[in-house]
Image (cartoon, rainbow, N blue to C red; front, top):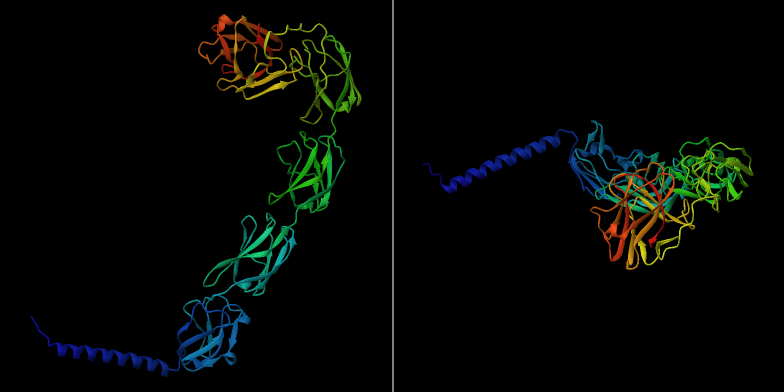
Length: 519
C-alpha cells in the first residue's frame, strides 16, 4: 500500500485549487477584455412595476436600450437608465412591461435573456360597460389589464380572445349565451389570481310588448311585437311542452310564428341563447268552441242533435260516450250551431268537441241524456264508491293513471272512476278501508265496469284482502256498461273487508268503474 504524508497531500490540494482559481479569473478577465457585451444575470424575478431591476454582466456600457415585452411603451432608453457601468445596469420596470423575455440592444447586436421576466402584479377594474346585447363588445377599464388572460361571464362562460387589450382597457365580445352577472378576470404574474367586478353586466333579453291577433286560432300566424326579439331562439306557448324554434319571420322588433295545436290561454315565454327566459306580461288567448245548449235532451240514438254555442265552425269532430269512433260528418255546421246525428250505442255523458288544427278538446257542461238508456241501479245498503269513496274507503290504486272524480263516462250519478291500465305486469284500482268493513248481513259485492276499445274479453281479477293467488275473475265487455254481482262466498266469505283490488292480468286498456258496494 502507498502511503502519502498528510501535509504533502494538503499542499497538493491547495496547489490544484490555486491553479483552477487562476484559470477562472484569467477567463473572466479575458472575456471582460474582449469587448463583447455579456449578460450574466438579471433580476429580481417577482419585481413589481416601478421597482429597480439589475442587469449584471460585462461591457454593459454598450447597451443603448432595454426592450421589455409589451411593445413600444415597454422600452427603456439609455438616457433613462438609473445606473450604467461596464458590469451593472439599473432600470425602473416600466408600467407597460409584461411577462416575457427582455432584449438588450447593443451595437454588437441584440442580447435576449435566457429566462422570461415575470412580475408581481395586481389587476384593478374601475368600470365596465353596464349593459350589452349578446355578440356586442363591452369595455373593461382599470389598471394592469394587459395581464388579464381570460374573462369569465356568468355561468362559466369563458372568453380568452379579446378585441383589444392594453394596460388600462380591455374590449371583449359578449358570448351569445352569456347571462347577466358580474365578470371574473383571471390575470397572470408571479402569483396568478382572479378579480370579480363590483358592478354587474346586464345582458339584454328579448321583451314582448304586444301580440296580435289576441285571441288567435290554432295554426294561424301570431305577430309578437317587442324589443331585441332577434335574440329569441325559442318560444314556449302555454300548454305546449316543446318550444317552437322555427319562425315565419324574425327581426329585432317583430316575430311572426305559427300557433301550435296544443296552445292554451297563458303567457308567452321567449328563450334567449343563454337559456334565460323572458315572460310576457299579457296572456295570449286562443279561440275555442263552446257549447251553450243541446236539444233535444234527452234524445233517441239515431236522432239529430242540435248543439248551440260559439265558434262551432272550429269543431273538427264530436265524441259521444259509449261510442269508440268520433263523428266527423255533420248535418250542418256554422259558427253558432251544429246539427249532428247521434250514433247508435251512445250512453249518457258529456259531449266532447275536438278543435280544428289543435290537440285541445272542449266538453259540454251538462250530460247528454239518452232516451231508454240503462235502468237506474238500486242504492247500496253499504256503499264503497258512489260519486266518491264512502265508509272510510280510500284510494290506494296502482294503475298508470286513475281519476276517482271522472265525469267522462258515468253509469249512475255524476262521477265515476277512470283508470288506465298498462301492458306490463299487473295493475289495479284499489279500495282500501280505513276501518275494516264487517260483511255480516251482506251476501254480494257489486260493481259496474265500462271497457274502452281493446278490453273486450279481457279478465279482471277481483282480489279481496290481499288474496292475490287464485283470485276470482270477471270478463270485460267492450263498449258498454256491465254490472258484476259476485257472491261473497265465491270471494272466500270474508268476515271483514279491508281491501278490494280490481286488477288487470298483463293487458292494457282504459276502464270506467262505477257504483261499487255490498248488498
